[in-house]
Amino acid sequence: MHLSENEGIEGSTFVVTGGLGFVGAALCKELVRRGAREVRSLDLRPTSPWSSDLLGVGVRLFQGDISRRADVEKALRRADCVFHLASYGMSGKEMLRFGRVDEVNINGTCHILEVCVEYGVERLVYLSTYNVIFGGKEIVNGNESLPYFPIDEHVDSYARSKSIVEQLVLKSNGRPLKKKGKRLYTCAVRPAAIYGPGEERHLPRIVSMAKLGLLPFRIGGSHAKTDWIYIDNLVLAIILASMGLLDDVPGNEGHPVAAGQPYFVSDGSPVNSFEFLQPLLRSLDYGMPKASIPIPHALFIGKFFWALYTVLYPWLNSWWLPQPLMLPAEVYKVGVTHYFSFLKAKEELGYVPMVTPREGMAATISYWKERQRKSLDWPTIYAWLFVLIGLPALMAAAFLPGIGPLRFLQSLALFLFRSMWMTRLVFFLAVACHVGEAMYAWNLARSVDPDNSRGWFWQTLALGFFSLRLLLKRARK
Image 1 (cartoon, one colour):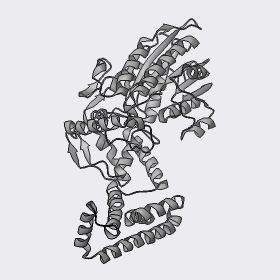
Image 2 (cartoon, helix red, strand yellow):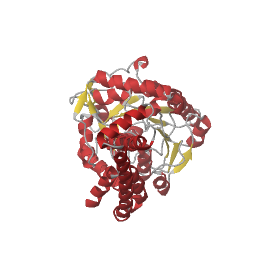
Image 3 (cartoon, one colour):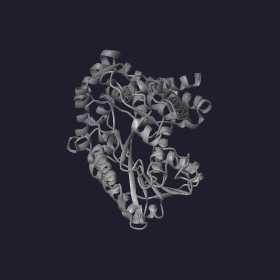
Image 4 (cartoon, one colour):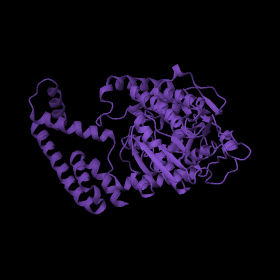
């Protein structure tokens, strides 16, 4: 395509489903910057970290659920183009809420398509995923000619639902519109793993696990490579896809170049996921796993967590239930080579990554270092377990009667400290140290990290020097 930068954007009204998310918010702001007449965000959430920015540039925020047709109708009235980004169940606990995954991803997309036809929306760009093609079998430099992965062989409901929906969206291309006497043109953008400042699904979970010391091993060999895509590159690809659906381009009147087509997009630099994340985690002083485990062993662990969290299904949406360490689909994503060529997007849409992986990672590292500076550091899970189990065990050995397992604790305490009197003295000294360290931490944090001084106090009261040493390290910086 040879179009102007803002072709099909200036003077048009756009709806972005999932507009309060990381990608959706970036897309909304870029549409406004390029001169869109009106940009609307349709999102289930009333607010997000990007709400104020979107309101500041004039984006209209519609709160609604795409699985309810009335909410879709309210947002799509008099729209010219819809960017359908909203989905559910991409990772973590959400993957196991099968009913909700289908309700949002399948039923919600059906509502989008039906309302587009009824209200005369001419363009629909669907944000799909690599996983409609990939299901755990190695793919090297794949392209859009590859068949869909068999529906019944997907290991997770998210990939299965996205595959069903992408095929539905692409087959809906060319449907006659009821109001304008024209047709609905559709296409699908298949992005790689997304990263960038503010990404809210993958990186926060990875960073939190590294912070707690819960990244003990790599999955698969170092030869396993996957694609990544920086947020600005993805937004560019999505906008170019919408331009590819214009039916009044000279030479292609009535035959949009992107109509009914899928497109793989990425930064174009396949890399091992652990090597890709290494600069980020090292910049935050978090350890990288040195050992690795084979795919079959990782799958066994993933299936264990799958079974465990399936049993815990009624509480999957509870705040207190942590994310599973890994699930089978996530094992495949990081441990099995799968990367694709974006040649089709380049030739038909004019897509070329504008931000290099080095530049994208540098921006991401800067964001996370600033976020780390504003947040409370905490020790690894092993320090938490040592203190939160050890101190109560010492108290039980010192003061409770030696009944059942307490007899073993008392025997161990006598072996270490030689007498009950010494055991009690050690306990009181430990408590006194915790209190003294907490007071010192609170006083130091008021000058080093005043916004988190109360957090430093309580954490140091619980963990003692394990917490205090992190604050001292911050003070030295």
